[in-house]
Length: 498
Image 1: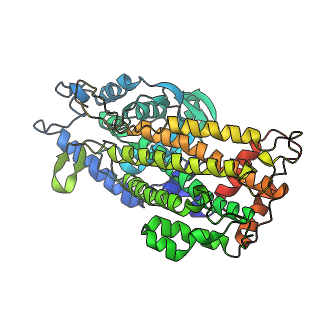
Image 2 (image 1 turned 120 degrees about the vertical axis):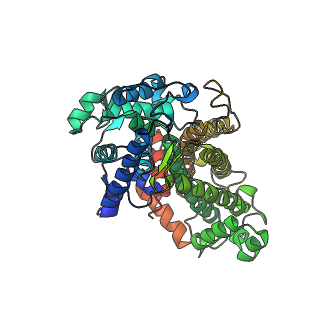
Image 3 (image 1 turned 90 degrees about the horizontal axis):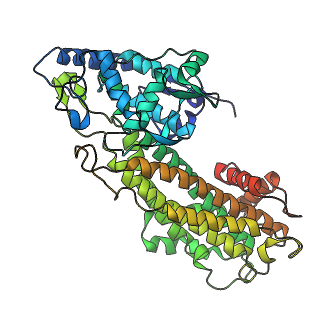
């Protein structure tokens, strides 16, 4: 597909969307227009006016941080930057996935570009220039509670942008100063307010949630399509999607999903060989997928609000001569949304696993061979894949415990309640990938089912999906390792371009 301007650029003067975050993993033009520069400059000039007034307190610019707010900060602005970042270098664990790190910095850049944080204009410009390269700060996964923003992970990002710590360039981990030089970037110079504004936001949480939401949404739609293909291959009756039946149920998500399914199943002809009522994994799929749709719409709203909001403290409003100290860095909305997303992922994953189990079982698949093996006993078909899906479901279930209910006081009880949104969002990101693999496993099973005796779909849309899978994946005959095939099948069905 030929790239357009919108495929390769983000305008900081326009709303940020999950699609922008998805694109930010690759080089991207981030445009800083005149309106953005003007509002950033106004905010910075106002900060200077406030700092010149000895009677006006400004957290983090004139004070210590967190529980030490009652003590004076360092007098030098450069020293105050170090005072902000040095003590936050306490993260541990593996580095965050690079797409999350890049997306987090895009979210942070957009927030700072709104002009309410009092940052220097060169900070916004420097961040924007980074996106034209493959530079990615190395950020450890563990350390944020998501309460004063993602302090520790964003501190690592800020340090890398200063040429300290480590970063990736073209996927290779290097000392940050070396990565900056090789990318043609200049190390950022920060004062205390710049440094605090870079770390005092929920940008890692928001980025991970938005990327997870995009992935789960794609898998959700893919699973609706795969359910239709399952119905058609088995020759089941699609009457469970009847609009009168679903409308009587009264839930808007179910109405939406059933409409998708009727469109995909249009033209299918039941064989009459199935029972009057299908198992719940087929018959109740509009209700289950519809409930997921309703929940995903809630998460959509939280992601949209997070991407359109400013997470920082304090905020500066020049027109009102106001320095507002508060809690816009508290990631509770994203914590709740990520926990909901995890629950949706578990239910969708369970549906995919149950449908594959039905498909490989000769007692329920209308006479197809066990495990869809081309020669049972001599071959084993989907047996290994089905074992793996059981493991995927166990892993998802282990990770669904809500993080947002696990608040622990910290920071001398300054942060006496915390949302743990970062943990929730990163967990949702991990589970989304397992759901994608479950969709790929089911898709591979459906492709194999037709090879071993399942009927060719009679609905044109279902046939098109089968053909796309068949073009990408050879039949399992004889047995072979199927790990790559599962991922290929997932890509085909999640892309939805058949």
